[in-house]
Picture 1 (cartoon, protein in one colour):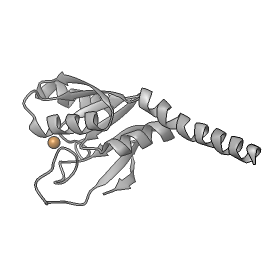
Picture 2 (cartoon, helix red, strand yellow; picture 1 turned 90 degrees about the vertical axis):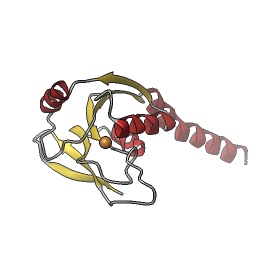
Picture 3 (tube, helix red, strand yellow; picture 1 turned 90 degrees about the horizontal axis):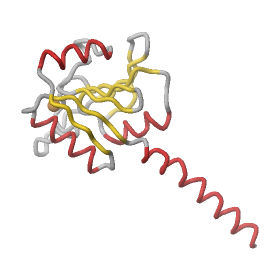
Picture 4 (cartoon, helix red, strand yellow; picture 1 turned 60 degrees about the horizontal axis):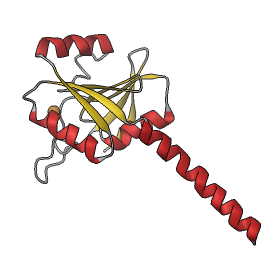
Length: 149
Ligand SMILES: [Cu+2]
């Protein structure tokens, strides 16, 4: 009986460890236009999900060249661009998907939600919800569906 309890306790400890490791890595840097409201709402969504967010105001031309350098083509582009743990996060990507990306650590450029789908984090418009995919951007520039919402 005691052994079983010990085993259970150690399982609980190991079960908790990856979550706290992910929390310490949850520091994200965002580039956005100073006046972009939906970008600001997305930053609040990240903070509510435990991320520490550093926000940089960027002029449209600087933002565009940042996206180009990061490997974000026109088809993937959205309003804001962020970096976490060496990954690029483009657009209104949910915090849960960012945490999963960091935890799974795939060989990829990052995640993108192209455009600005209604109902994605920061794009809440009442009850309106436009189903959208979170795309994993691979190093060769191709994408695959990482999550569907
Ligand atoms: Cu937006």
